[in-house]
Length: 414
Image 1 (cartoon, helix red, strand yellow):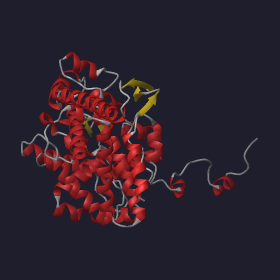
Image 2 (tube, rainbow, N blue to C red):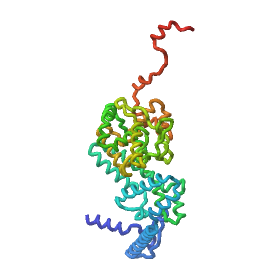
Image 3 (cartoon, rainbow, N blue to C red):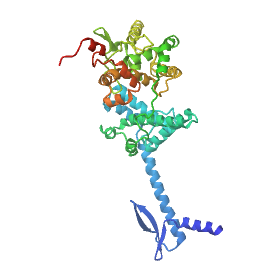
């Protein structure tokens, strides 16, 4: 055993050393090829000492370069300030991208309170993206419990969410708009690792593999008990009906203002507001019952809410401060829908899917226009879950007159 240890120690001491004739040389990798550098000595101990000194010198030089780069790298605060000037997007989109970047940084670094001015650009690396996705995945898996199926669903959801967030965050360094070059021209020191950060491909797909559309029983229970929600949580109740009435996304409903609602030819429309891509929203409000077990008409709820908010001289359609509208009311509605049996991860989006499916059953192209999808493929793939084969029986197509009527009219002339 002692002999083996001595042999191992000797191999470690002779690493990168080779003897040519009587002179010792140091084997060094330079640009992918081996170079032999003379140590100018025949003495092994002196050769090892000179080799170690040269290795330390190279290490110190590399560390000095890294330290120098870190001391001169710009901060996220500098980038954000310039991004707001030259980003070329709406204020909402700009702030949304900035918010997503800070989420990646805070979760990836494990520092929830860190501010943009304290974040140097050299922390934006592919490793940060991996750490961010790993942290969120671990959180989702922990919440899913020990059931392996639920954990698999949680991992799929975590990867999809984190990839979406990261793609939005890295648009701050958008290649097509040459954002990194713009920052450098403005005097901001952007290290090369940011280009690697921008080129990173996050794990996961943008499309969910698992959907849980509400069953007929769940829908019946929901619309039967919806008035109970009005008594216990009117803000969540209004959010539910506004989502059904407009087919709008969660953030779009939270953004809606009283002034956005207009009357056109006796019908209520959303005549203003901005969608997720910054485009104006112009859609009619649903003015027919959306479920057989509920006589409530969505447009009536929206009109009543609009008049109430006008009396209160409030600008926003939904009540409450920003966090209440964007987060708390939606979270409470999600919890209530879960208690009714809705299993989809994004339950408010499932409400949008439900009303979209109602329109899709009659006219797929109209559903695409109403939901504001750029491609009808999206509408076909994800907004037809509530369609059932038996729906064919309710279409009542007038293909031919009843048989009895044909018989009564006599033979048909040739």
